[in-house]
Image (cartoon, rainbow over all chains, first blue to last red):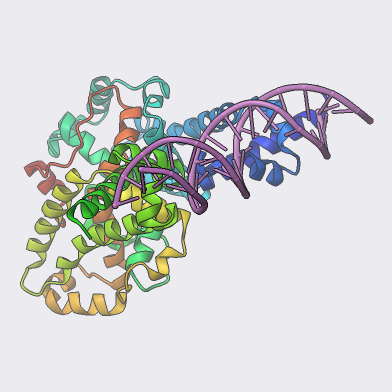
Length: 197
Length: 197
DNA sequence: GTCTATAACCTGATAGAC
DNA sequence: GTCTATCAGGTTATAGAC
């Protein structure tokens, strides 16, 4: 395999990553990917065999990229407060660079629900709760955090950080303003959501 | 126009509403709609001329259905607390019956951003803020709610209610549990998000 | 490895009989 | 109004020359 091979394959993969994120599987044309990569359709099939296979490669890469952002939550070195700070800061920073990624993943999980089973070696929630409640016993008692409420809280946290990116155009439709994505964690918000900050 | 005409047109429109919500514009085949409506492709074109026109009809209906849920926020009869209760209860009840609707709308706003301009006669946010702050001056002062923070708070509220439906499969991918959508407003949540309840 | 030409198939849209 | 048959255009995939 020569250097030029890798270059072409990479170019195609990069172009595919962009176009699939932008248009979704159904909206993407192999022709568009080829054009963006500066080659032709035949080479896409030469390197990746089919649209499905190319998409699968892109999806797996992007999915693990996104889901890996959730792992520091279990780190035993961090306090609960640090985790929340860390998660919001890191996650939102990441989302700013990949604003279409969550939508892309969610879209594909809807289109092919069978992915869900085999995507990630799913985490056992009971074990997850146990680990977290051991690490942060004091806070869990203080706020009476049960498995149920933990799941709700985590869903809300994910919602607050992810939704502004997904729903950017949604708010734009509603308001006659130049909507900046509201992802700055201001001092005021600290007062409003004491549990979160 | 006979009664049977209306019936057929309605059947097609209903079927289209379902399939478009399920698969999105690109993923939808006219054939599938026809089959679901119990007729054939020719009739779809007879009543709605083109796929685009049929989609447009469905989209407008669904969009106004969703956006109308946001209007009670300005009602002068309700206290701030009542509005929040009302919004969460009504909105989540509505989303339970139309779980794919927000995703559908967001998807289309991404696909055709030019919709945003003409979708709803956009609300002037400055005026909206003024009206609200006059209605709820006490609370706005107590919590020091500025236009910026109001927008953030409302985005977060929308996020918390909408995201569980959009991201249902997202959480399913993460956790090895039978995920019930966590939309119950529990007493515990009241303690956790004092501003919201 | 790369490219052009083309096959094989699918999809939206229409013509025309009933 | 309804249906079958078919067209025209586009899309994935492959064959074959270089």
